[in-house]
Length: 156
Image 1 (tube, rainbow, N blue to C red):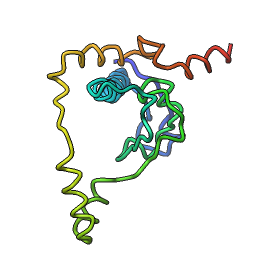
Image 2 (image 1 turned 90 degrees about the horizontal axis):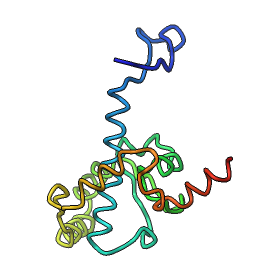
Image 3 (image 1 turned 90 degrees about the vertical axis):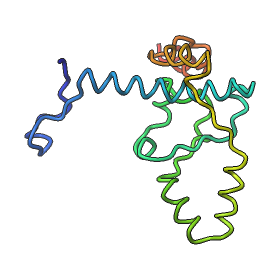
Image 4 (image 1 turned 180 degrees about the horizontal axis):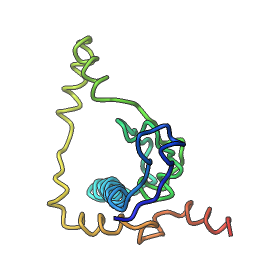
């Protein structure tokens, strides 16, 4: 299997080289594709477009070290202003604590749950097309990324 050494063991202070493999890249591409295609599928199901997004909350491990500009550039997130992205940490743990400690937070949790709609992405006919298109860098529909494409043109 092919790999690229990011840091040799002696430089990394590790017991082995730090490397990225073809499998790592494939897993990353699939995760990126799944994130973007889920966003697109949900937006389309509501007959919305990305201009209607006010805020994007990124939670969990993925957001802790992510560069939002790069995530938009590779097509992981929609091409919207960066100030709309907010990293909120471990939201499930924080929410659990709040629900245990606050009656008001518990009521709000039940209110939110009652207003949610569950969507099984695999049953949406267009989801797989969205997923396949999102598994490319750049996305197969560069028209969804006007700011990214404009930045690329200005670099030339």
